Length: 91
Image (tube, rainbow, N blue to C red; front, side):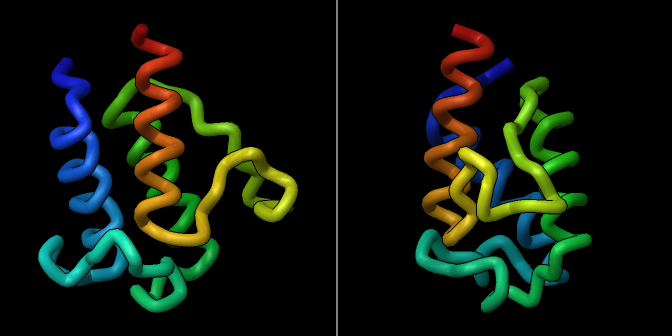
């Protein structure tokens, strides 16, 4: 599995774009999920897709997102969290 930062970034953006029914080029690092029109269900589906794509477990509680260690405030913060998890779990 290619776990380079570029690959992770492009795949995560593809997943988020798919949930938002947008083109990946419409998703910027500064975008928030709210701006992209992704609701809580879309977020959960995105997290599942990301976990499957990278064979990782994301420490995210959909029932209490503010209590999670996983920062979902923007696409950039999500990417940072995914990159860290991939590095930890695939060393």
